[in-house]
Image (cartoon, rainbow, N blue to C red):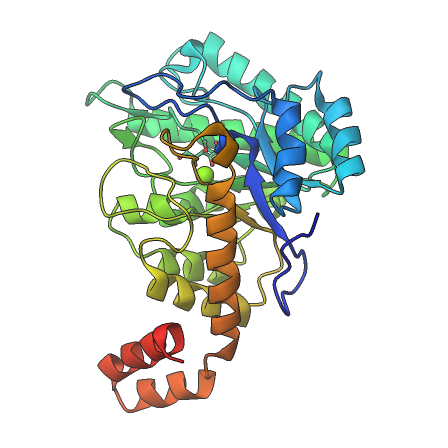
Length: 345
Ligand code: 3MF
Ligand code: MG
């Protein structure tokens, strides 16, 4: 089993993927096209695909399964990059977990979040991600937005204090923004919004909170992912990353990294290299419905190869040349230089 290693990468090296990335192929319009693979069987598959890290939701690797998963992962030389509570799949969270208008649902969401904190420790991950997929609204005035914001602040404060009290600074939290899908309008829609939310948390736990920006989530909103990443870096809040690709402003596709906008992806890697990003590099991609079970890991191979090629090319980009083009205001020429780095010999 050989693992992908990024040349000169600072901090945590190796690539990662979610166990959900190699799912049975359902989409909102159709059921599975493959038999679901038991979750623990997916760990050797990720290792075999060259991953160093795996990621999972609490509904995939449950608290009860966690000790066995940790043992198996150790045997495979896999590490858990992050663990995350699912606040979107169960019908009870249909209108959100932390922002639901029903206090009993909010209470259940909190219980799940705290349990996930404990499980994150069992799995040995340093990061817990929150993608609160159902926090938002489809109908105006369905929720009081100001109350919803306050509920998010209260919710994340409670999680942060629980983690700090029980585990010190062992676990950090990375909030993943997304503008829409599955809700028409989602709270925590973009990087700026999440940074503002963090600024409103209790001061003593603010250092525990950062972001997990995902390529497709910025592009769905027509936002530039590189700027989203730069903003997180500027704030010292790039705790985690979800790389993939997106074919314009449409439903969330979770395409292989590097597939749609390679030149921008090259520039992204220049930014990450120059910032000495030390966190893990993880994919959030979806094996398409049309892929046969035997080829289910193709999406990881394609994403990893694209990343490795672009990473090496990004290392060779002459930073001085970028400076010169900026100074001379030759921005078209700068884009041409990047194209040469990408496509040239
Ligand atoms: C949805 C996502 C999620 C999150 C995951 C981690 C199913 O668009 O990106 O993947 O990454 O829930 O918290
Ligand atoms: Mg994601």
